[in-house]
Each structure stands twice: as structure tokens, then as C-alpha cells.
Length: 112
Length: 114
Image (cartoon, rainbow over all chains, first blue to last red; front, top):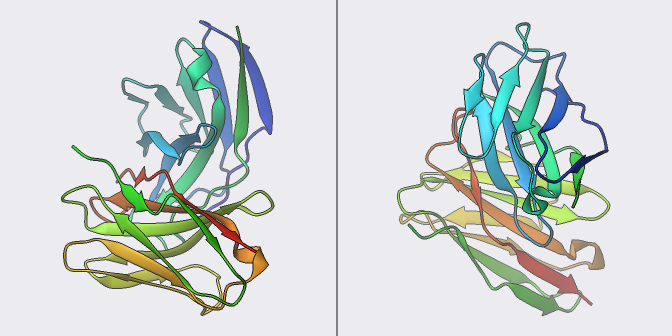
């Protein structure tokens, strides 16, 4: 699976939108873009995933660049409960050989 | 629908012993993956099972092994425990093992080796 690059940390205010960037310049045409988050003392939690088109669900939106070399996870209205480490992961459509390859992720801090 | 269940939640073992961890996936899910999480190395892939067959294996020594049963429940075993095996072991289940599938993680088993 191709690698991703994320900022180490980001800070935002409660009730404001948050845009978490991810660069994946070596993405292949069959790689899905996945986002997971891990709250303190919990296992990772699935957030959203997509291939080419932007995706929305009850938790977040995923905006994918036209060339697919970058993507942005959008939390529309952050709450204190969104404070977590967010991981951007590429997964080949066939599953790949290495499971989900977690990098260091982005530590999101939410200020009240 | 019940989530992914891992047992036990906490374990303390002595160096040289062996340990078995259990994972019950979400009903209907046939793919189970295992991960090790440590402060130094982060989340690392151990292995993945689908329909009782190991499909992929991470870069871990042979002391780490696993299996999956016909009901999709999975176990992982670590033999001859070392201090460095102290970690949070996470199990994830998914409908299939393809890239267009979300994975659901359990709360993990915290293993401490003394």
C-alpha cells in the first residue's frame, strides 16, 4: 500500500469546521482512501472512505482532489469528543498484503 | 448488532510464557485482522484471516501466530514472551478483505510482560 503524509497535529475550536489534510502522491488507481480515528484508550474507529468522488456520511465528509494525490477529511462542526488521532490510509481494492498501514496520523486538539 | 469483542481486556504474563488472545468478530464478518500497538512503533499489522485461511502476515517473528475458526472467531498466540511484546493487541473485523470495506475494531487486549 502507498504511503500518506499528514501533519503531526492540528488545533481547532469547538463548533467550528475542521479540515484535516492528507497527501498521497504515489496513490495507484485501485487504492481506496480510508480515514480512521482513535480516541484515547480506545481501538481505532472507521470514519469514512472513498475512491474518486467526494463522500459524505453522518460523521464527516471526504473531499478527494481531482488527481487523487491528496484528500481532506472535513468535520463540519467539531465537538470535544472529536479530539483524537486521525489516520489517513490507502488500501488497494484487492486488500493488499499489509492490512491497514497506519502512519503516525494527525493529533487533533479541540479547544472549548 | 454486537461489536467486535476481545478477551481478555488485560493480561499480565512473565517472560518466557505463552499467551492466547481471543477475538469475536461482528456477526456475518468473515475477515479478521490483528494489530499490535506500542508507543514507539504505533499500530503495526500482524496478520489477516479470511474464511479460516491466513491471507497476509506482517513483519513479525514466528512466535506470533494465529488461527480462525469456522464461526470466524479468531485467536492469536504469542509464545516465549519477551518484554518487548508488551502492547495493546487489537482485532478488527470486516465483511470482506477488500479495500472497499470498512474495518471495525475491538477495544483491544492490553498485554504486560514482566
